[in-house]
Image 1 (tube, one colour):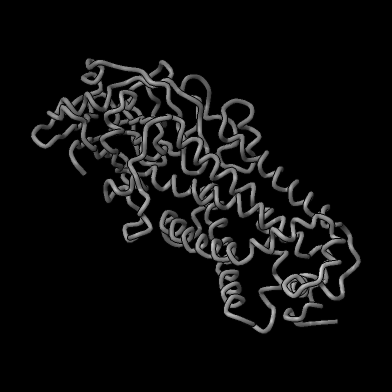
Image 2 (cartoon, one colour; image 1 turned 135 degrees about the vertical axis):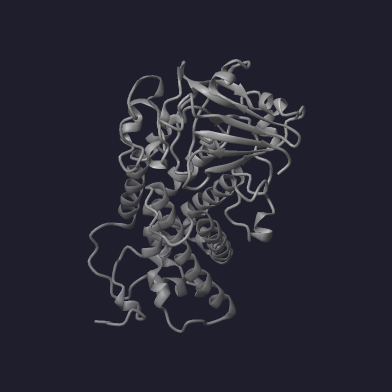
Length: 419
């Protein structure tokens, strides 16, 4: 019996083969492309080109070529793109693991390179395996709020995505033609009957010359992988909805009961206590909002804000971890009206600062198009009641289609001007 992983006889599973690998590869080709695009959109939603406080990858250079001003319509845009990104990523985990298992003999095959094309394929495969494990692992840890990796999630995941996708594209270019040919031969018997150098070479790497007794067919193995993906989908997707369906998201940190009931009974990420926000500093006597422009500065109490024209907007909350709420009814002062209080007739960019003293995005910037949208509010009420401390009392920002971290809670200062 072969003892070296470089020997084809070492890998004895009868399930491995070009057809099995090709089916998984085509699923990943589509799925990972969607993941990459929605990931880029998620990064663009933070408007990292607007202000250094929003940019967590300042050395990205040409990798930021596609960035654009994130729109405010439709208001559920980020809820959709990030929900798809996280839910699809978790759903694809069984497919990814099965794909890696199916090609593991190639990682040990000798000689390391038989030609330039083969060397490129081997290099791309190594980067692909390492990049996939890194991206999926950091993504799942972020979703679970387990920040076990060194450094900030944002640059790690962003740069890792580009390395992974470059290897993915290279590998796809080299392997897709063969994968499609394999898929056209839907019956395994046809594959066995094939002759030809390329197919025989791939079979020599994937098909054991001394296979063990089968315990499941290749189609059965695919059903097992598909069932695992369906299970992960069913236990994750509920976090994108309110009501009973959210309770089915048992694998997500936000899959449990809503925080309390009533008008404030919808999901949050940060509590006031976790961010060191004390009732004393948010009291009506102590709290003042500083609104600053290039030529004027005003200080407003909550009572002062209540004397300004108030407007309502139905908007969701959506976070980078993939969870979201349905529309909540917010009521407060339009950001554009606050800009006009300090002499900005045409709404400019704004830097919003929170009372919280630690944690990412305690300062966040919004673009002029977000400030100008009439649904963008400094909210004082939600669903007909004053904000609770955990939802940002005395005042918080709410902007259509913006990631949750840009909807700053416990607002202390707003600085209007070009950023």
